[in-house]
Amino acid sequence: MNFDFAEPIGRYWYGNSPFKTHFFNSITLLFPDGEQFMLRTVKRQLKHIDNPQLKQEALAFIGQEAQHAVQHEKFWNNLRQQGYKFDTYLRFLRFILFKVCENQLNTKFKLAMIAGVEHFTNAIADLILREELFTEAEPRLKELFEWHSAEEIEHKTVAYDVFQNVTKSYLIRLLGNLIAYTFVLGFVNLGLVMMLYQDKKLLDIKVWQEMIQFFFTKEKFAFKVFLHSLEYFRTNFHPSQKDNLFLVKKVMHIS
Image (cartoon, rainbow, N blue to C red):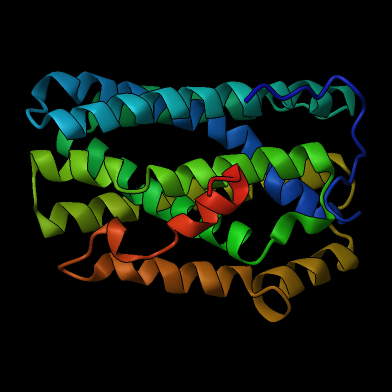
């Protein structure tokens, strides 16, 4: 895929909703460096993978994550044109990812964290495609998020299998998941508050009503992602147990 966001995109590109727009703007700010951290970690692990099929899947995973980073970063120029400033946010994100997580965590915990992040993003991807959440979004961004969601589902087992190839420790899996969720939720919410503040919408009651509707009462986004996430706590969990590959075929137009 090669997305082009050269033309101006509406400030509230998701259904004219400031909250939904900035929630997914925040995810777009997080993805590129997050993907770089994941692909760098998995790439270093390639030489330790003896299973040829898993090694091939890991190589494909690295390629897909690299493309996700490139395509999401293209949209940053549009956000900057709209007046948003996020360089300080990016410096903080990169410090946590590359100075703290990459340098201070051992391989087992890094892979456990990545497996946790992949489970989280798979839960979001499943919901986006299953419920066609981006119907009201600007067409190019709808295509970007649906393509990314399809590929997240397509390679949903890889990070988990690479982690399991190193250790099958249930405790490390859960601790890595805790780190993953703390990291993702922390930075998504930080980015959301930053974007709303710069947009002078942080104290707008309508924005927070939109949040309640989207997360809890109408779309029930938070509730559904949370339910999906609980599957990870089963001792016999494996990502392949959830039958959602048909969603990939639907987006990629595969018969």
